[in-house]
Image 1 (cartoon, helix red, strand yellow):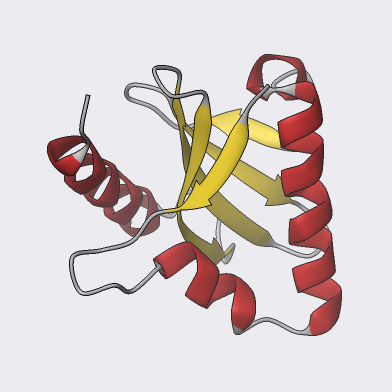
Image 2 (cartoon, one colour; image 1 turned 90 degrees about the horizontal axis):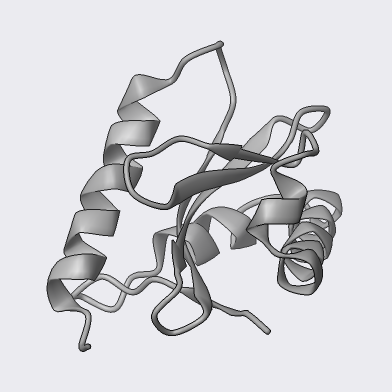
Length: 116
């Protein structure tokens, strides 16, 4: 069984949680429901749906709602059976490379500090 955590930067800021908390209640409830589905079903099962997409490299994915337009980047840390919620953004165009690059930077920071 997997669990989820919000990634914390060195200064204590949690980008994905800040993103979630700044959204209207309807969006927050939807994000929480999608996270629960991720924990219950796992990333491999949800890759078959429109709710999860691999944005690589490594095990970097996005949890999303196309209708509401939000995205949350997460890392599947199989060594500790945890989904690490990295950051979030509102979808504005087909490819938002700057948001994906930011998620990769946060993932590199997480991996660099992770205790094995």
